[in-house]
Amino acid sequence: TQIDPHLGTNAELEALVDEAHARGIKVYFDIITNHTADVIDYAEGQYTYVDQATEPYRTAAGDPFDPADHAGTGTFPDLDPAVSFPYTPVVAPEDADLKVPAWLNDVTLYHNRGNSTWSGESVTYGDFSGLDDLMTEHPTVVEGFIEVYQDWIDLGIDGFRIDTAKHVDMEFWEQWTTEVLDYAHAAGKDEFFMFGEVFDADPALLAPYVRGTDMSSVLDFTFQQGASTFARGFGPDALRRVFAGDDMFTTPTTSASALPTFLGNHDMGRIGAFV
Image (tube, rainbow, N blue to C red; front, side, top):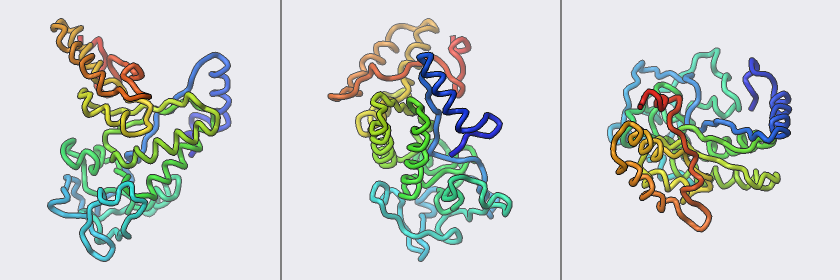
């Protein structure tokens, strides 16, 4: 809800956005809904991922359930930190009110299953290398993040780069993108643009975020892989596969032409290193 104080104030940020616009520069925020900082610990002192087949989620009354069954429904069972999770979430007393908004301090709004293995269900349920993974199937999380990022639009920014979109359930994006984009349009920002980081080079896995939600686009990891492979001296087949997959993004209102292109980034490395 506010800029880190060492960078300045929200008012100074708003002034910066105005100055950028006066020079023809657009301002995007790199945002996150998947996880927070690593504040929650587990009483067991273990962090290996525990899948739902081994230990399901349980309601406060002890009944097993699957959060996916409630995603997008607007309802969710009551939870109890002592019985609902495979690990018991605990927070140091001095950190009990650390996160803002206050709802982020409720440990039952996190998955609490241990670290992701980057495969299977852990892609959406696992902690991101220790970072606290939010229960994005819960309506409190959905509605809370809608409000957070609608408020940032009021500062006059032009769009969002959405971090770790691959690690959040699709039902979250179906609701969040629509409500946030509608808010931007109602505020007069007709060209507000939101693109997700879905870290995968397969267009069949990238396209649903464009076709099935109001996310404007996704980062073009397919192009990054194809272009860097070609630049390393391999044949043109990699580029042919890039263009062959473009039709997967096509609807009456979307196409592959809107995919933001890049050759390297802070996660994977730079194009010079690849070549």
